[in-house]
Length: 153
Image (cartoon, rainbow, N blue to C red):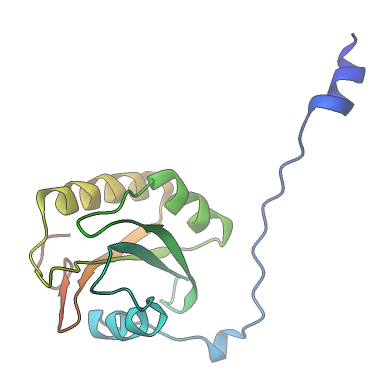
């Protein structure tokens, strides 16, 4: 079979798109971890105390929110996070910044070693892509922990 015949029947076209219907002036601007926490609380599922989830906010250069994305939903003690998925979404919407967030159903605000390792891994990847990890927030029903505020980002 020639390459022409194979190409038309076996090659998949890949399309990448992001569409925003929100004017920049109508977008939410994040100026602090408190702003991000309040927004995450509004978009979070009703399962904050039941199972762990991982969400991200995607921001433009001026820290206006382009959108949010649910990366994963797990069980009572963890959720799997795929860095490729996070960065593919960030690249798709041409984000300049990402704010990471996951909840601890237990109510414990302390980041685990896994939380710290994941943050470091994502920060290293973001440097290569020139997309800034602005914060990683751990959310509970009563409070939150900000990696940026605590100087551990």
